Amino acid sequence: MKNRVVLTVVFATVAIVLFVAGLFDCASDTVAAFALAAGIPLAGGASVAAADQYAPELVKEDISKSVVEMMPSRTPLDTIMRHIKHHVKAQSQKIGYYQASYKPVTDKIDSTADGTGASQATPASSFTYKDTEMTRIFLQVENPDIWRVHDTLLMRDLTLPGTLHHATIGAAGTHRDDVMFYVLSKSGSVIEIVPVNGVRGSAAGDNGDKFVVPDFTSGCELIRMGQAKSELAISTEPFSVYPSLSWQYCQNFMAQIEESTFERLTRKEANWGFSNLEAVNVLSMKMEMELSMLFGQGGEYIQGNDRTYFTRGITRDIETVLTYGSGSGDRTVTKEQYNGWLKEVFDGNNGSTNRLLLAGSGLIKSLSCVDEFQKNIAPLAKDNALGVDVRKVQSYFGSLDIVLAPLFLEAGWEDCGLILDLEHITKHEFVPMSVTKLDLKKSGQKNADARVIQEVSALTLRYPGCHAIIKPKA
View 1: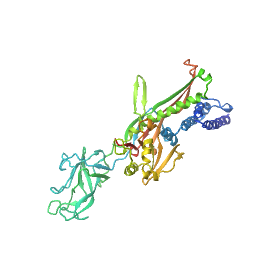
View 2: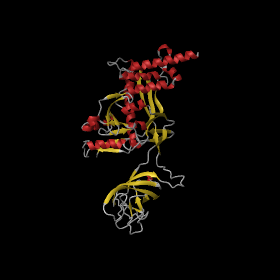
View 3: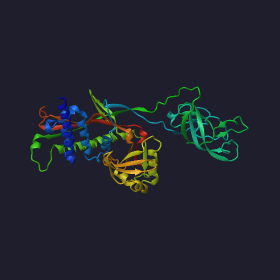
């Protein structure tokens, strides 16, 4: 008996694969694969309903593949996510997840500070030692959350008196050097720092053997480096801003296909049947899902005991925005802008060396006018790993897989683009793509055949700094 069961499952599995493969010849027939999930008998008396009992993921996988095969380039994000299989099983429609990021390593002095820097209440935005020699100074920074007591930082390329290693106030000549500081205290957005190298005080004063604060200008960049703890230290201040807990919602996407019994029996001029209705409805559902995954506003609507969840589009989690053109309708991409994009996308964010650019037709047109872009772009080719046609651009910073996003035109994003690091994007599935047959006749609702196609899912981004939006200047 056990052997007979095994043979039945194997036979059903082979039959499904062969049958589905035969359905991929045209778009209308592709969706007929959905009928398998309803338990339509196969050769030998086996059915997918029986196969699903022994291999429950098999039919869902075939359904998902069938969806992908329907005009894959029309909804590239949906197609790619089904191919790369960065999927996790969601335990509920409301997902709590962490957006892991790293602490920025650069900050700037707040240029609105106008004090002398002598106290926490009078932070400075710039300094000159001409009138006052100080061994420590208070600064107001733009991003106080990244700083801790005992951090070290650099101010680069400062102008110092004298010569290298012999810099003293009052010495002849000047030279340029990087000066390191040590953070002694922090209160709110003000940090107290002391120089560790640089320029020493004048020999005639009290600071002749001490390093003093060098000249620096407003808006000077601060490069945060490692902490320096004393030999007795055994702990440090925790950094609790990153990662941050975020909430995402799996939206219940559905499409229902119905054909009345009379409509099915009526003679038609065109060869149009239930599978064609499925194709049209599923393609419409795919486009709606794509737009929600990109631009939706996350949240929930409560009505009595019923809850409706709305997924948040991934564009709402991306803060990096790259611009082009000069504004007022200009869509010219300069060589400097193009190279600046590549540098900012790949440099300093711990992401992958290969990124995906989903581009609107207007952006592709603008990029095509950049000589360097044309020189480095490869011919159009089918990427089996992604399931869509791509054109790859190679650069010293990394490579971009460029994919046309047709829905950007209809969504008002014709001149925009979305750069994604696919290693740091995840699809959460509360209910994987599935098909349910509704028996409307037996229930007395209507004289029609019906099926419901459903998926409850959402996308989340990790390391938001690895992704970017491209837009023309306003």
